[in-house]
Length: 99
Image (cartoon, helix red, strand yellow):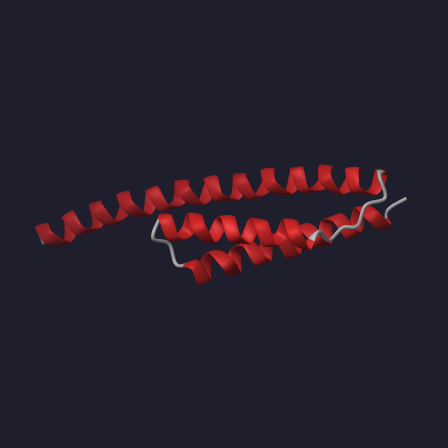
């Protein structure tokens, strides 16, 4: 019985830690999207294209290097950042089309 209790206490502590990390991740995503909107407005003002393939490739290279250095699955990081960039392009296109 004591083992189960110890297990549950430790599991709760670890899950609480994950919950805090998740909150931080969501805050960071929100902050990233705020900056993306600023970039979108700047690109619109200066009539620059939404898509910048060189920048995207540079970001991917950097985050994959970081992932390798931290022993994080690079395929996972690639998927996450591909989704982030897809959403960034969507937001910037929306800004580009707005009056």
